[in-house]
Image (cartoon, rainbow, N blue to C red; front, side, top):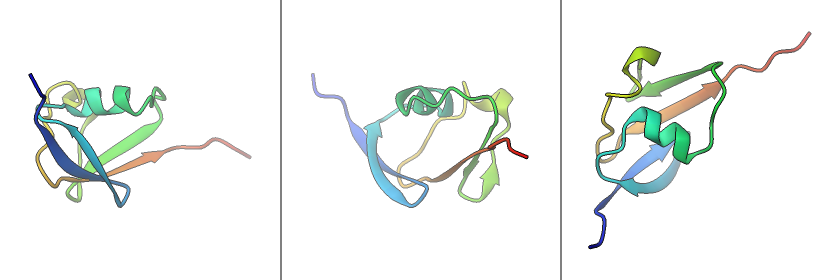
Length: 71
């Protein structure tokens, strides 16, 4: 059986992912494990508590911003 895919945009670049992905699954797929990040979907911040349940939709525009420490 072939998995259905959909197009999303991550930081401006087009990506194909499986239908039914959550924010948490997307971050795992992208191998992003840092806790210091923010995820915005269609110009709205997604609270970290919603990462496991927030389903991504076709053509979502996602911005992932990682905090970088420094001094």
